[in-house]
Length: 114
Image 1: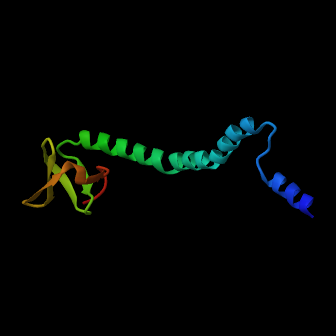
Image 2: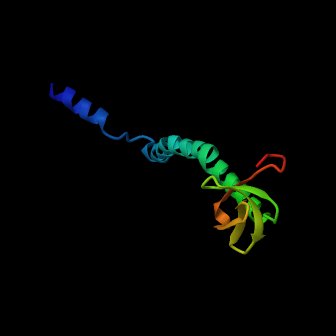
């Protein structure tokens, strides 16, 4: 009976043969799922968001007078003037409103009706 308990305790303890080599390999294999999850998040979330951000910045830099735009608040307008950080939109006859460039959400196609 005592020998059985010693054998069980010995079996539960760390192995004496090759223990140093297995520790580093075991730690690396335990990180593989975390690395895989990060790669999946990068390609599904981070990379597309960076691409959209870059496209939006390029669109903001290319704004010019006469462009039809939509603001992030849903206001449709035509650009009357472009400043360094602001854009003046004509949203109706004799109605002009100044917006920050960052709040321009998208360009409308020129063929789209008002």
